[in-house]
Image 1 (cartoon, rainbow, N blue to C red):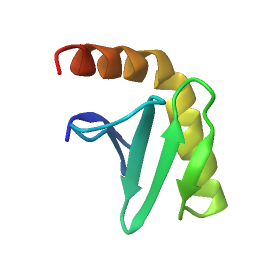
Image 2 (tube, helix red, strand yellow; image 1 turned 180 degrees about the horizontal axis):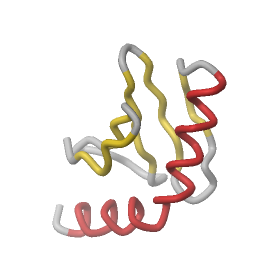
Image 3 (cartoon, one colour; image 1 turned 45 degrees about the vertical axis):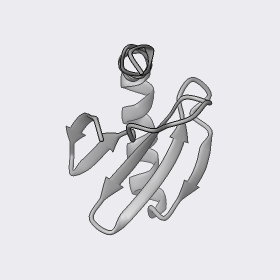
Length: 77
């Protein structure tokens, strides 16, 4: 499970057997979410609204890097 970023208690990652569309999983404590890269569409989330906004802001900030890492990882699979 490649970890993309650890910041402000959030862990951003994807699994080794992922599928399209490109997305990331996020964990913080017992909360989790799945967010599509590019559109930032929230697929599911158990985060409280304030943490959800903070998480989405971090994904927006790192969206290009996350997409590059996704493409590089799955190009070799």
